[in-house]
Image 1 (cartoon, one colour):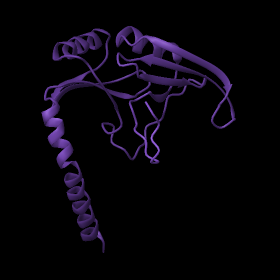
Image 2: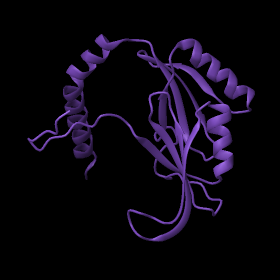
Image 3: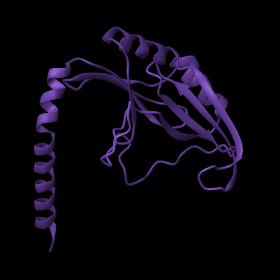
Image 4: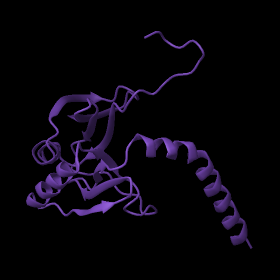
Length: 179
């Protein structure tokens, strides 16, 4: 594939989503043994390549079927990422897709058998989801799409209009709330 010469670029796919974990082995056991995502790569270093700062860490990568990863940093201090107290607990989450509704139900059973509290199966009209937390407090969603590409194409056609309506309504609400 030839590089684009017009200054634009195309984001191809997710490489990895990284999060802090409190314990690398505890995190490995959950993602590999419970969720079935193989540990694919481990980086251990004392210096952060992007900043040059000294901070010993291990960086774990768990592979999803499409070749993308969920990754974690264990900084060796036993601390997980702290949630933002101003953000409701259901907002920040990582959603990952499974191949069928049967797989979603199998994942739910496997999580429950492992002692993980699970919410759902929740019907979102275009997908079915379950929600749970990993050992680090990260909210996860496993889902399966129940509507196909035609539905997603219609959503894309309406996306800018929906966002414009939200933005206008939000501005109006803020204006009305001002003294």
